[in-house]
Image (cartoon, rainbow, N blue to C red):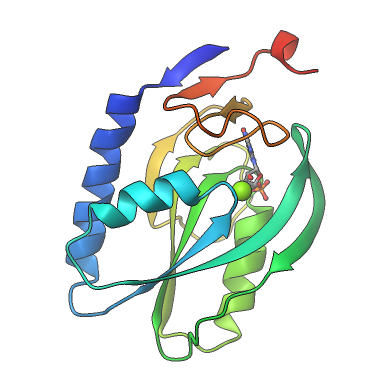
Length: 172
Ligand code: IMP
Ligand code: MG
């Protein structure tokens, strides 16, 4: 595996994102909705750098098997929070095709929140097909398969502190 983003680079960038979000959402008490499982490392780091009041909730959806998108969404856990009239920030590990985030943004909007924005630590912008901007992006990365910092290959490697690119010979 090849190093793409080091622990220290990620830490610095997460702090910058948190500072921006703290400014943008001062006095708005947003609800952060993390997409499990991949969000858990980024979400924990991001929220601990914020200087505003927040609430936290999670959804669990899945579109990936092995190293590619299946093109269908499986909902495994829905939100428990009441998001009516609230500001929502969706927290995602990576946006690849954009399929997952597009689905969730539309679905949450149906519940009548005041606003919905998206924070993703990684964004494969050249492959994503989205008709809206991602509000808070950690890093735009090339269209390669990456692991670490919460991201997995069949549930492995989520614990790695750096983001690593998996080379074709690493994929079994
Ligand atoms: P999308 O629906 O194609 O945007 O894919 C989003 C989901 O696929 C993410 O939440 C990840 O769980 C997974 N995913 C996409 N690209 C990668 C990758 O490079 N490594 C690990 N998981 C990925
Ligand atoms: Mg994910």
